[in-house]
Length: 565
Image (cartoon, rainbow, N blue to C red):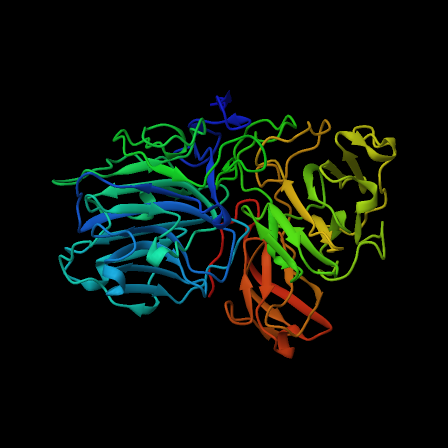
């Protein structure tokens, strides 16, 4: 069935209601929108149920794309009784400052903390927490699943007593939060994207109720939930947030981004979230499903996992925010940040808005280009090409058209192509000899008295200007599958924060310099490659290192965010 595309009344572009797409999966289901949470905006959703539901048994399912590491970030929490800054709290899910995941109840009386770390910021995790404290076996009372697999190893595992009742979650008159927790007013905001949230009151379910394995790609994909949201006596608070209605941020009614589509009318109030057209729009089409919509070049059209700026592939002077679509620097030295998607074939378009200009070069860089050092010293090289700050104005929208097939980069300022370029015909490129891909969108920043600030748009919202004909937005739905790189070299830095290596997919076993890698210790496997996590010379000497991928998982087009180990 072809997808139906409708323009919503506000929100700055096209929006999708429920979409069906061609798929080998039985449900043929796509998630149409996500909601972006930015801690600097104090963004969160909240709801205070009028009455208690089942305080012993429930399930929550959500798709999560992280944007920030190394900070405690609350996802699903509640606080009570009666006092949002004191009293016992329940957390159905939060990320710890060491990037593990914790589920706890009664203000930490009962705690489950993973040994796995969640440090992949380029793709989506599917996380399910199923609770049934009536179970006789303690380990059956709380179950945590990630990407369809149950987590069974915990660094801390204190299970609730049999028949334990929640102290605040699903309890009447107690505030429920998505994206924060008012713990002594510290709030502990979540940074990232959330999509397709289900809460089942009164039943503990497995991930197969919400997702399934695609028979063709092997990807773990969302599917339509077909069960009831309230199951059994006393269950009243079930809800489904699909974020498809981006008509408003209205609180106090079942409309807009807080709309409950379960049929129960349990809408959520919003704070610090926006659907106003432009860079501040938090309703985006960055989702865990690859849609089949036609990319006409408008942006905000094709559902998929979108490119963002990569926190694992940036210089230390650069700070990211707004779902890693905004960057700035306050240091008088050159540092580069690259995108999460690298391309070697095809034609691609994205935009960068110049919020504040200093001494930068913006364009593309290949995987070998260092994250410290300047584009300017070697402009138009085989490793990088970009436009220098002296060639554009503050407030401008820069358009980048990368034709990987011809090795050409075209750059426009406010829809006027530099050098009288024509990306469609291939005439007069800004640079025409790019050879050694894959190439990544890249920004090289330098603070020259004014903090540089830039906002990027890879197509997860409408573009300011229509892309040239044949050029597509940077998302997994548009990517060719390609192949996973299985061997190569990289320049190490002898630091625990080692380099990021792009592979176009997931390594499941590998060696570096002939030494077997333990994921989570020497390196993290990621949906798009691997990241060095050791200063050991055996794996990350400050010189040339050689890697070999001995087995591989999914290609990045269909990969889910990875856990380590």
